[in-house]
Length: 153
Image (cartoon, rainbow, N blue to C red; front, side, top):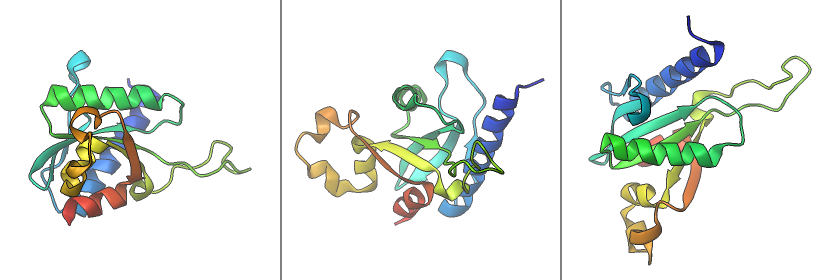
């Protein structure tokens, strides 16, 4: 029997996988089985301008964003992927009916991507001085819908 948080995570990964598959026109995008300490991202088969991309998904609201970002980089490297994105569920403000808030539509999820990986979407960024050495140290955020638009242009 899986825990409630595992079921929520699986549900969220499924929604992200389906959204990306449709938004990118790539029916081969799939959820990946866990690989233990050598996990390689939750979603794979994402083609971004010819680069292989994996997505790590988080359906939780917590303050461990730096840990999740580090995990995304480890999993990108373990998968041998070119690009790794962290996709975090968004939540509405708490209300009387929903004290914990409600999860926002998948398209409004927040994507975290390093400047290094973003440069593969926008090659002009590679011209920025210092990108070669520190591109994984700096992160950019956008919605999942915006990421998918950039990945299809």
